[in-house]
Picture 1: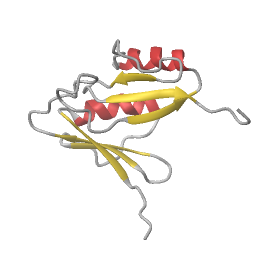
Picture 2: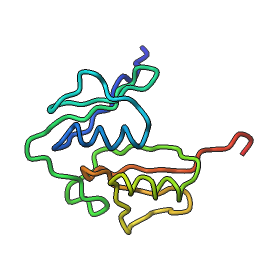
Picture 3: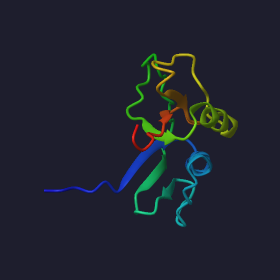
Picture 4: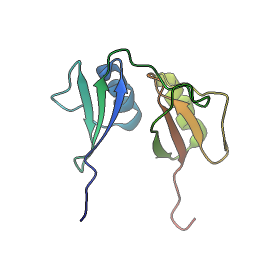
Length: 125
């Protein structure tokens, strides 16, 4: 049996706002059927990054774990410091706890979900 990943969905209070953050950060387009209860971004292969409204959403409290992260996304970037600056300008926050700041950085999206950025692997590296 082979399964194909078709979507990753994040719970949040405001799907369109969180989709807007990730659309700006990734350059992925907003799905045409996005709305107040569910919004999605689609890559060129049909993978959907979805955001679904949840009543009384409580953001994760990374790294303390009071409200678990439950999942996180990883992204490769060309320049780590430049990416962190751009993402914080879009509304992400850089928490003080950074497990390995020279290898990757943990940020929190506007809804509080942790995600990581790491330098893109260079060919031959």
